[in-house]
Image (cartoon, rainbow, N blue to C red):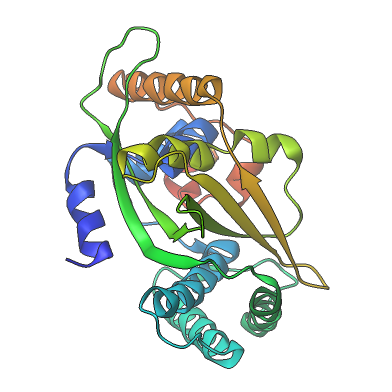
Length: 270
Ligand code: SF4
């Protein structure tokens, strides 16, 4: 079974992902349009299309390492990115760009950050998984209650260090460096540290590789861990969101997120 069909199988059960939790916390109304009503989005934000194309190129890079094939050249991963970006622009919904951006400028930025990645990213001792799906039980740390909803997702890359320990590598693209509090509180990282032991990866660290879309592209690498307290706090948030969803609490939160909201049409009409 491929990683994507294994993930589809896990998603067939009642589940929630770290990004769905973040979506609810950002705007419950947008969460409802996307996950409950399954409305078609009006557009794809440019950063999403860009990040997806970078992910696709990096997945090809790590798949070669996992399969013990020769490491792909810079030109090969740039070509994979370019093809994925082009495909994204030819598909529906349309990609929505900022005023100062074009498809060509995104292409140029992507080629630059992949050059930095190829030059500077540390090569794992061994790659054991790419887009590796996971599913883990959520339990309420205060009541011990276990909701009938699993936390599901996929690790970008699972690597094994020389000493046998595992690391989950996660790639992000961003316009600027992440602040310390964002690094310390990112839900996806905490979800990975909760899922890793149940997937046989022990207390794996999470290595966050942030590719910075700056004039001079850069790669910022963070090795992150989470305490038991961090994990309990995450579980409290997850259980709170699940209870709010069960109660049908889908209120709009107006703010910066409305600027690129894919569901602004039905929201404003409602
Ligand atoms: S337009 Fe704003 S308030 Fe409405 S769904 Fe989108 S993010 Fe939420």
